[in-house]
Image (spheres, rainbow, N blue to C red):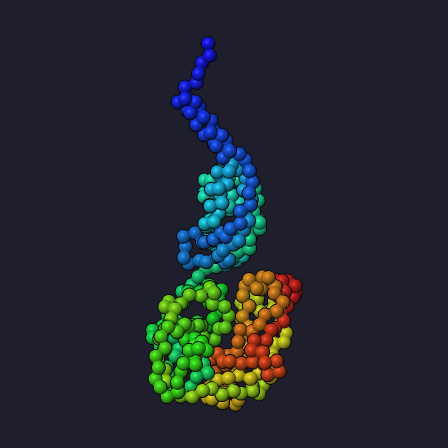
Length: 337
């Protein structure tokens, strides 16, 4: 006798078969390459920073299709904790860090490879210093000293940079060319939302934070600036950690034919020899470690008789270059002995 399959039973068998097939397809082992950006952070400690903060990597994952989908999502927002330590650079094992990260392990996928497998990172201590906002606008003559609000800001910066700067840290308003063009001689003006910079420092402010970051400047402009061809060679002032000074050789050590633009009283002091002009060349720790072969100066400053540094506009007459490039020879420790 021939038995007929009940339609309900047939539908149930079909559904179970499809579920088993779908589950098996999802568990099939496979490999994929996932490209993404991972973020580094120092473990729950705002007094340290890690650089670089973001790394672009390509990770090769192996696992089931479902686990690979989860791994792709997890890598996109991955945050790797780096422990605080000495102010030094070290090689971070990205294969190990990504493979044992809880978010990746939770996907069930395994890490077969990471490109690059390691990354050179630096963990630096951050320090906070109160800095006076100096009411100074380089290259602008005023009827009286500008008024700045607030009178001081809190500066957060890497300890290695703080050690290069004077103990009495000062910052100054930084006017763009557009804001300078807005100034009208003889009329009192209030400039709101003016960023600040560290006085006498022309290096990168990437790792420096100011609180508040903007100030208000009240100023009455008296006249515009004049120019002066500096009557003597301008020394290239290398800003580097004291223990590294003997490891860095620069060429040329001084610049000839420099023209600067500043207020008339500053130019008079430069012309008489009371004030000197320096070309500031700041060498970052990562640049020293990479042993770069050249770098452009950050800018020119005038050192007044009282020791105050005043940034000024400057350029080389022969080439009309505002930031000439300086050749560098960076030795490893022990090479110069």
